[in-house]
Length: 405
Image (cartoon, rainbow, N blue to C red; front, side, top):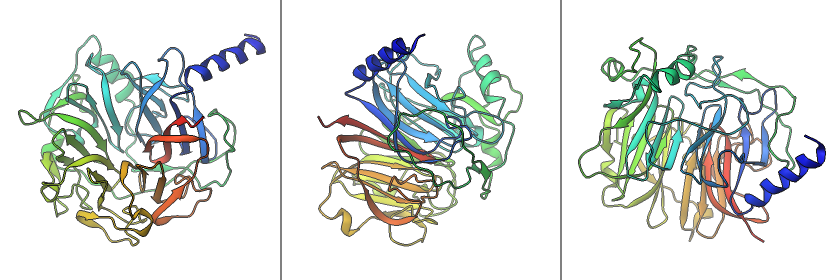
């Protein structure tokens, strides 16, 4: 294709996506090979083959990002290699967003990815989850030979490396608002974290169709109590959140730092309501590697779990095993609407369009133009757009926004 034709195609795509756009910043190893982290937001474009526009951004996993197209499909991009970049598959390698196959024709309304698992909720209120078997509660594991086997063979069986966490060397290069694309600089390293299996019982739970003992499970339908309809989900390191249409928060998975909000460090092997939040209608939930943040209908922020880098926003580093109301002067008289958590950072958007981030900032994931950690909410400013939603990946952050013009 000649240069003029390519320019025309890019202009056409820009017009199509002018109402709903996606920004990203931080580090995404599969989509930024040999490149330094992005410490300022850049634009991510949606290919014509996927849809006309983005509908929502989702909690990105370790090494990959997720979003939902206007056709209701889960779209992923980033790393799924065997070198420890990501434990949970995103479906494809590289920077080009592509659809991820799920065993349902229903449109997706929400999705999220953690360190060891992914989770998605359909328009019918059903929840699907996949990833490490230890993170998957009892449910139906799909393994249709016509689709599931090839998916498992080509995607899940490649995940043989069980080192706990891989992260890039800290880089200080900056982006100046350029469109997201690959370039050549350097930076990959390793950071080890504590690892623990949830339970031998959990390990022997539902398995994939091949029965070969791999550590990953195909997408499964989560078993919920009759009448429970889920409206949104979130995935942490190895814990998962599901929010019902009644405003109740259900948690399951790893609980070592109190991230399940049950007042202890016990694991939850099946979806369990956070009892201390009963009576408070929760409208939004988010999960980090070891922490959880929830937003109430009154716009209040509740946080619990690990707090080593100030990711709870309390101004200290003390872990919380029960939900704690976040009271900070910067949020006074603010009604919070959206929340998300990265590995060790958190982000919110208020009703009046303000963006706040806090926690770990080694790779610029707070979007503040530096790499300094924050233990209290700090405002992020992006000119010329109206924030619609914000989502944190492990080392990066995505913002869905509309043009202010």
